Image (cartoon, rainbow, N blue to C red; front, side):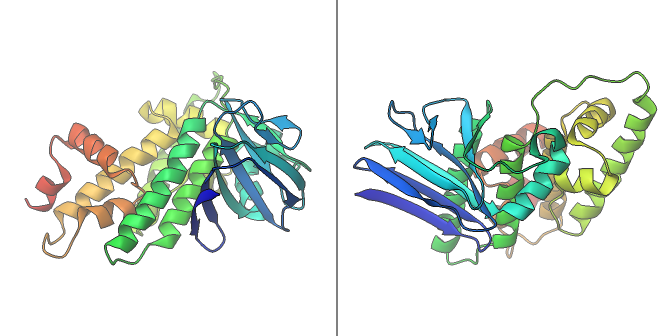
Length: 280
């Protein structure tokens, strides 16, 4: 009746299912467990009272909420579930205006990154299958953190343009330098730095960080973090033994799940392939 893929990461669940028959799901979410969901478009797809056929929406289902979901035959549904306490803590850091109070019922969230959410689900499941298929141990902590913060950016971050303040340039420079130091410190400790951690550590909002990093290096915080991770991977590959190191393991260790895209970005930035660096 359905094709079902599930990855259980302890405090996090990633699910993708394709229904071969029309299905209605009625129930109530557990305590401290929320989900972000999408479904392929269909005229009768429904998330409680909300039409599920919006191509620019994802759906947030809070803890302890009743739901009534209808998915027509042939539709694919994907969701990622988290601890609501952890989710709201990060969401309030990034966008306190939207997430000051948790919603009581299903909440549709407008976003132009619905395809990115689908990709997170697909790449996470593929990464787990590839790792386990190779007889290796899945780095659940790294994958869980990468997924969590990727979804936060889709659901919690305001997409409004940042309005620069004429009085904030000096502060932006200070924030940019502090961000650089914090990111380097995290990477040297083999940790993945995130926008939420930076905002929390520096006591600033996501909007303030966006302006500061753009002023400092001309990139969004997410693009800057990706570039820093690429540089760190390169340093690790250059210092590693090609007999005992795999590019896949190093790339995934620093949050690069789409290996083809990683290789393309690496070649474009450094002018050589990851294997050329490793074997040099």
